[in-house]
Length: 442
Ligand code: UDX
Image 1: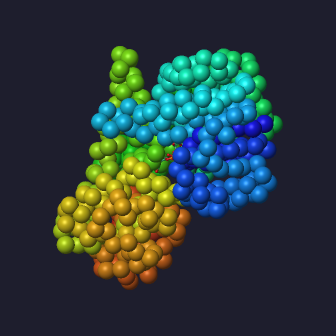
Image 2: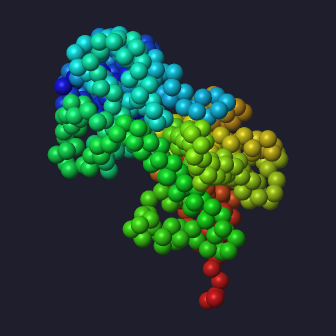
Image 3: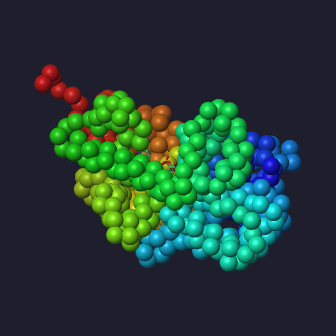
């Protein structure tokens, strides 16, 4: 089988590489000639564990190619995947579909023979219908079915998520298109992955509903964490205690500085807009969006409080700036709001991140970028863990104390244990856990 993958962003590149690993001939297309040249040299435009090796292996096997020529890639393909960006439109939060529609028109010009056109980009309900309309308008004789097939990849574990997904969702009522999609996902059939066949608009909504539900789960536990701090309870035990209930499930109950990344902030907002527009407002999601947006700067207040209410003229060390570990992605990272607010309160910032500093440099001015965690902590009045990279999980606390000006740690990911930190001589604050050492029996 042969497919074309339009767009070599996160979704397109990972999906294209993984399909080629399944044995499919894949041509990845991007308008950005520099990016294609880079990929041709075996260099990855994003940091994703395992991706470079997977790409190299399949390029060498002749199953994976890169090009700027959309027409060449589309002609003769069994399926063409649209995996271009759908950023939040400036001003109103709607998903910007201009890249999707432009790709649809270009695909229509080039298709020959029966072709399945698959939207992998996250697109609002009804987009498939519009893609179909654009194709028909551009080429009345085009023999295509337009299918929705959302991706659920998490950055940092995207390859594993593609190869062993919880499920695959395929939105089409066309039996012919279903057969093509089944053939493409055959290796997943063999490992008994649940495949949900449904209508196109249901499939489009499933993607938004999934991300919105997860964002709601995180926001719920974040609010419970705030309550824990006041009533002297432990949010991690609460998460465990409720997560063991099979109806709730333990995942995505890790309290932190608020969700970020390329999907949750954008998708929650887009769903809120869609629902309001059709007169069925999603009030829970509206509240989630609002709480999460306020939570990120609130984390800076937590830091200021830990620094005796004032950071003016003080130095704060920041460990981790990406929105989560194992990625270099800075989009909507809580660190952006936190650092901005700390700087405006007069703090000097020394920061270190294993992969995100190149991205972050342009987005955060006036930050001193450091060689490692200890370099960042040198001479600082407090250290803040914003992203839970593995290398911050086992810091040498004695060494940290010796380079810090004051042993103050604000751990926004609950990486450390409050009792251990107290024993190590740190003034330690975290999220939703009592930091007062337990006293005699209550
Ligand atoms: C997400 C979805 O998980 C994926 O299915 C979808 O296709 C794309 O969006 P991703 O954005 O890569 O993936 O990261 P994810 O691991 O879901 O984390 C998103 C944000 O939530 C991060 O900022 C993370 O720190 C935060 N988070 C996650 C929490 O604060 N607590 C948790 O328990 C889980």
